[in-house]
Length: 97
Image 1 (cartoon, rainbow, N blue to C red):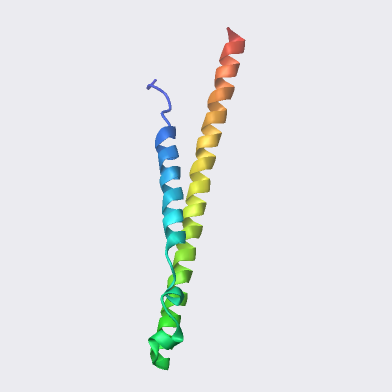
Image 2: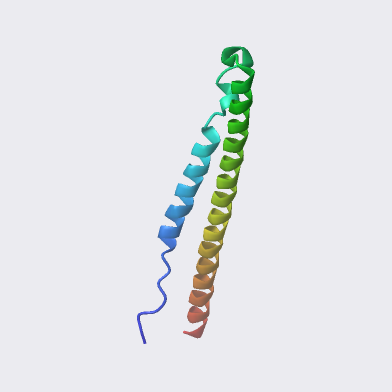
């Protein structure tokens, strides 16, 4: 039999922390609508293009944030399940001695 199951729980915890940092950095980015007013831009065609780009940019950020959240929750679930299993196995082994 091999050395057993080795779950990189600490690596998963590091990944969760990095995902939290990524999400925070994405949230901090300002949208183009905050860069100026319609008077600053002037041309109505350019205003429309900037608005369209900004909407697409925001939607992309929201999708990335949703994916980061989902991956973080999945990784946390793995950590929680393996830590709970480890605790239960140790408890059952202690009862057997």
